[in-house]
Length: 607
Image 1 (tube, rainbow, N blue to C red):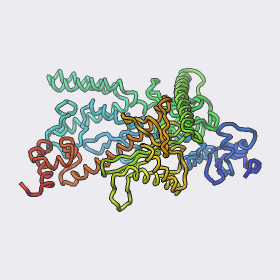
Image 2 (cartoon, rainbow, N blue to C red):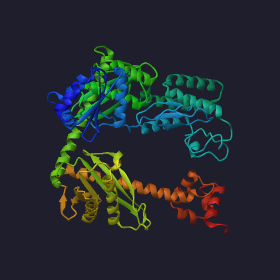
Image 3 (tube, rainbow, N blue to C red):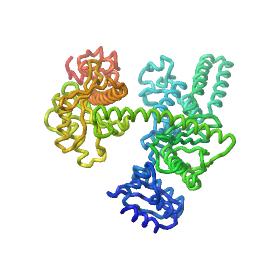
Image 4 (cartoon, rainbow, N blue to C red):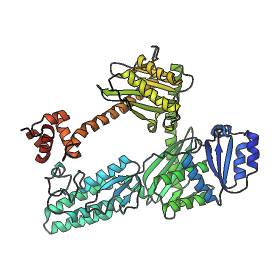
């Protein structure tokens, strides 16, 4: 349909709430939106002049569909569902791979331990969080374990109690020594309760209880017990100073900040009892909606992805769909969530702090974004590319002799790594021929496989890069070019030529024309970053395969578990050295029964 036909179609829509779906000429979903009155909202796209992303969207619309809803709330829920399903290009999409992990405590066990969980489940376990990331969550577990001297080894209780002498953690004072023969289940349960109190924000009550116990132990002349309680008291006091990351999950009030510039920034400040306890920031490309609609969309995605809700969310402005959105969040939370846009007082000051944070973050990101765009502009001129290299893919080969020859592909979009598009390749996969060390053949194979998947319409390889960088010289670039030629594809290809320090000093064409980049520090640093990142990714993959291959040999030995395998490899470095070790040398590293099993596995019945 042309713009006139689209306008006529939109004028026939009802003045009812619902969802509209914009489609391109191939039927792909471009944009999903909701409306209180479908006719008014949809027809606005086909009247007058538009700018920026709205103009780009309208120019691609070939048709649209609508779904009439029974209410504005139903339209809100339906819009959210369709955006999640189709992931339209012109809708705001927060990263759905951003992790908000929970701490899980399996209370059914007599000796429960904390672990990470991506989401809660109805399994009778207790869940705490979510927290800002897996690293922060691991840090919380490590801090609790250290403060309360809980176990962090691979032993399981009560199964392993009394089987072996306590490990080094006990002797260093980092663990209570739960593997000792005397029973400590009551003490273990008490410390788990103390950990739960910390996670629930009851640190002051815990400190008061520990101080009371310490005093009672001292009065009863139990000085060793009193000293142990004193040390634990100090550990918990230290932990209290690191409470911010823990408290963020229990925030009772969130303040939303939003700033629109070359980039748009969405900031959430978490407040607990009026004190700042955490902060989240999301950057998005400039959206086509106005600020109120953007905030509504971001709120839905942020809280439904995060899986945790405060009592009150403070908004920087009134939004049209406040009531249905409030209902949606309340139903998801299982308790009432209030949305407010305060104009004065303490809550307004919390909002202003969020707005200042959003503005500062936006300025920093915009400056960095502009620098990246300028670097890409310089790179385009340096290499005489037909267009700005918005998407860059780089390949590297990693091998040790003929073992585990692998390749890695990294992706940079607008100057930043896009890790979800990284890919790994095993050279010779699916072939009956033995794999030999041939970097050129390996490079040809992986480049051909990557772009063959593109030609076949594989969604995981659906994007065509604007620039292809190959770790190596002109010959490496040449074999990559030959792979593309066989598939009938054209992409600018350059090899990354290294200096004596293994840093990229120049780019080179398949024809051998070398292009220096050291005169432009920004381009030089950018290409160096790509080369290092690609090399790192390839090396990590190669090491993981080697570790799996090495480990599997020892894992096959009855009685050798993961812990004993790792102990042997730490001590002897290689499987060959383990095989050549004397029984006495093995027994010095692992228990005698394990040493006997390893010796007999490699040497049979020989003396």
